[in-house]
Image (tube, rainbow, N blue to C red; front, top):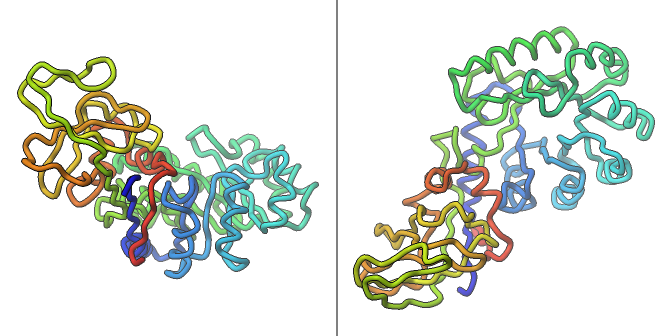
Length: 345
């Protein structure tokens, strides 16, 4: 292989969805924004639809339109950014359901697409998207007269089960929605793990589907193998890469690997990440550059054809920890140059 091979285990993805679904007594949707967290929204959503998912969530209308082509007319597709200026034609043509976030969006939607389904997002303390309490008090009557299909909010600290923000947001969400007779959704992956009080009528798992925390029982979904372009011997004292940032303290064998920050191997991995040859760790040395990284393979005793960055010995969260980031960034940064292979193929 001349480019990295990104293997996507769709059976593991499906198992993760089933496991999260089994934790609830309500419907389970699926978040497939950012191109299915970097794995391909079409392939991810088709498999989850086969498992029984009927409602999918994307960030923007453009993602929703592409997903509609992949899924056909039956599943419902929701757009978190709501009804933005310029979205009207796309929302109508692809039968997308905007999650409206403000009085302005509500007015735009009711004027531009009367009778077209919509949901409402409520801000329960995250201060990011959704109607604030005062706006909802003003607009609730009008919105409810037009029959929103869902009322939703989003938890800010669900990956910390004991965080005081979780019960606070739950209480605010109930105060804003109790007795309105509209189906409700509050929880993504972290909220599912908080228990039934947080589940309401539908959950919307995202990162847990793809093998990431906080769902620590998730099956790994991705494997990333990177090809070796060249190997060379260094004597003690020689340096590697831009800025002479690594210097050999012994005679060393260095493998140059095809892959860099243009492929989602973020620069923060420089000198911190580990690649694997089977069960043998091989440290990344020197800086990550645009298309190449360098790895110390001295202790292998052989020149490998490829090394594994994501696989049985290192998942997305372990790699993220080494790079000082989160598994979400690792997944969604995976570049377009990788050959994406599916299991089952």
